View (tube, rainbow, N blue to C red):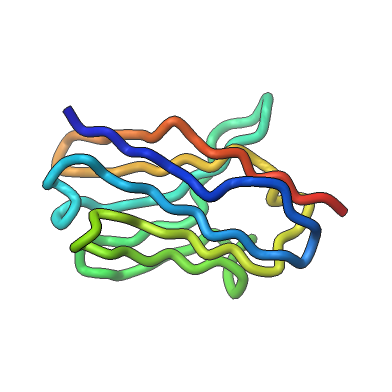
Amino acid sequence: QVQLVESGGGLVQAGGSLRLSCVVSANIFRDAGMAWYCQVPGKQRELVATISSGGATNYADSVKGRFTISRDNAKKTVFLQMNNLKPEDTAVYYCRAGWGRFEYWGQGTQVTVSS
């Protein structure tokens, strides 16, 4: 069974930084496309950033220049470095792994940015 475990969320002031981590339990990681999503109550989950198995990255326009997604295949971990955080970044952040026709999600980690 594939499990994704996120960590690194918390409370930070506007302008601050956080680094989210997501560890994947299974050996699919190296071949999986990884992504971070965010969700606020009452709204759909939104894509924040993606990184392919080959390391190609894409970002939502709202986070370009502030967030960086990266991966460490040896540690089976994907990261989201979040800089210059804004109150509108407040959300639960979820890690997703896509592998073939399968997808797996973590339980989410709360990020709260105070103004």
